[in-house]
Figure 1 (cartoon, rainbow, N blue to C red):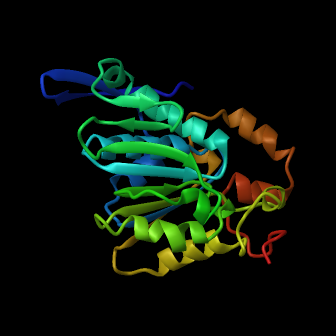
Figure 2 (cartoon, rainbow, N blue to C red; figure 1 turned 60 degrees about the vertical axis):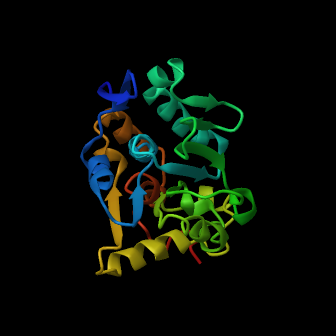
Length: 246
């Protein structure tokens, strides 16, 4: 099943540009429409979390916002970067936006509007910037300091928003985590669930909820994974007795 594109037209001074966004599935649409200052997304592998967050970043950028996307792995940076470049290709080619492949930035000249993607394992790798929207992807693998010591102050200038994205860590993933507490993302999710002020919003969806994935492949992969790994990485369940949880 092919993912459809959702072309949008926007005008910049004398130029009309086309912004081509993916058509979000229902669960992506839910977090895209949220107005909560803090959003946390728990999703299964290939559930569409990075593509969905790229849509969020582009829409915010077109409103003049400054977006910083951080994730531990270069592979995740590449996925996000591909999506935002694709969406804004028309405007980049027209010279309305400036793209820098070395720093993974797209900027609107003479404004503060910008999208930047970078690897961020810990506080040190995230330092030196500020944002209107801070996105921390694969948050379960990051050191908690990336948010608590550096991420929070980044949002002070403009009362910015934060989005956390994670998949419950399996034993396979726990060896590459920089977190002091392997359960810190799950604990943040529970904290968000308990919030009654509207400041926090939680979103959960599984790999099966992505209509663009093969149902046959999802059934096949079940035979290749342990029951625990399937619950964590495909169903995106926070399992308290998971290997490496304590």
